[in-house]
Length: 152
Image 1 (spheres, rainbow, N blue to C red):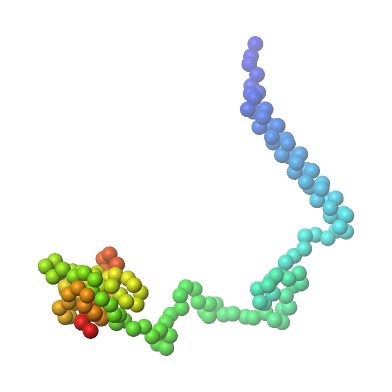
Image 2: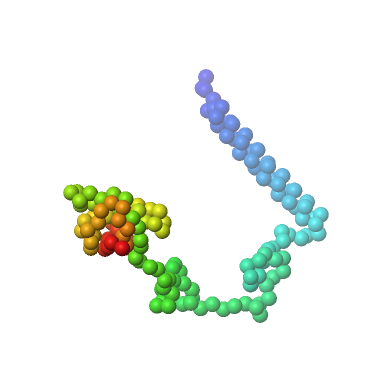
């Protein structure tokens, strides 16, 4: 006697498929019934007016604004000469640590309360700990470095 080819897994998949088909048919009938009760009205549309607000009335074609493709800027707009912010690159601070034998130290910025690395190659004047200095910042390998350091 041959073994049945219909396994439990196959029969379960067939039951799920039939149930899904039946659910779909019931939803379709419910939508038809709803449509008949509402007098044939379909789903309402939502429109966007010229200000970006959602409305239920279509927008007026006379208020349509034409935009040329070349006027659309994608990304960051280019800076013009008059757009530059007034930024003072010279900062003031106090030397919190400096080792002359090793040739480096740290400067504590009085404006933003940050510590910046300072190398002997970036010095204009000789500095020691607790000196008040003015300096400029430059991007280094591990962060911002104080360069062009002068005593005040």
